[in-house]
Image (tube, rainbow, N blue to C red; front, side, top):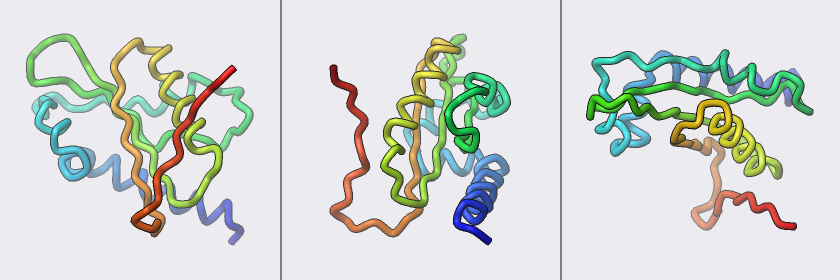
Length: 136
């Protein structure tokens, strides 16, 4: 199995866990967000809608690991898009890709976005995730 195929298998397993255990997943990784969500209303899975936002991108194998619409406890019409990206290897283009995902979601839906990144690689305690900056 080549490196890319192995990576796709790895991502597929993470996606299955995220989708099947979404409520527990949010409770563990973001307790503050978990408390804001009205769990009596089922989250909407928006993965297919998100994939349609850029069907002709430079890289067709780039895809979000999970995109969900959740409803808040305050009863308002406001909703949050939760974008989850599981990253298990050092990728120099990762920060830019996260920015692109964020902007595409924001542009298409005009909603507040909560982005959660899970690094599954064994990084050192001094590792700082990359930050994307655009300058002219």
